[in-house]
Image (cartoon, rainbow over all chains, first blue to last red; front, side, top):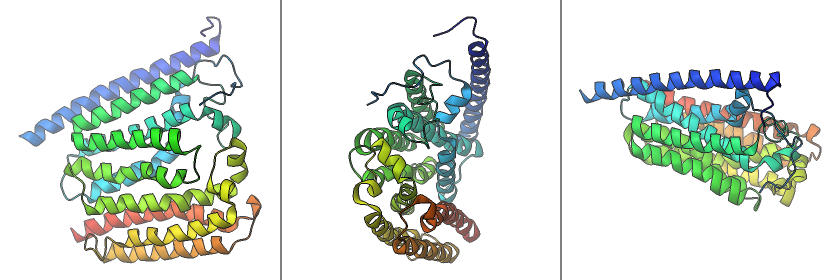
Length: 43
Length: 303
């Protein structure tokens, strides 16, 4: 499926990787915030 | 199942925008909005972070169901003008990517909902995803003109989930909100399917106008409007909402009823001439937004 010389495919892969990384960071922040929120409620 | 040869035999790597398109962001607007209203009218406080997470989970669940719908229906989508440019039929994405994305997002949304709020809300979210994918998409859509009627239940879950995320249970008010969306869906979609009939017919989807014709569809639209209006107004006499909501719901439902009667009186056969149908379809979206908005206003004013 991957064509090494295809710049378009590389560009798409790069943009997908960047968006995935950003979403993962957002997910980590969200889980942290949820944990803090639940600890606040339980206190 | 998909047996059609797709236009592009070797789809190139999908872009992130194609994955976003799989989630049907426009449809998600109404889902998120009704879930948010369900959450806001629930009679208990919720931490803002948990409220945000609950709504995010509803959005992710709706996106997952939409992605699985597009995975299963890529053959139908390829035959309809309205959907031919979706990522799979347009050849920008392979079906397996859509399947993996949809399943992954489903698990993420349900597990995150359970961890952030409660497992009852997570179970209702899981049921709504499964209902949309298995009952509506796989079972009903290609088999019966009642597809929209029963399948409409899938879109009616969000206010129930929003409520359950706060309280951990479901009472009469969220059930009435569920019923309202359930009964609103047929007139909303049948109005649309009247002026995109040729598209559905080309794809072999047994929508009511394709199977029974426009006259029966117009009658059914008018008929469904009556119980829908009753479900919309019911929270007021039952003491679950105040007069602000009750009067707004009655007024908006009356307009809906008048527009549906205009559709009933319409004899138009060409989509270009179907002004009454297009007007009802456009108003139906405003109607649902306004009804739910007024319920929140009513609750907060009384509080």
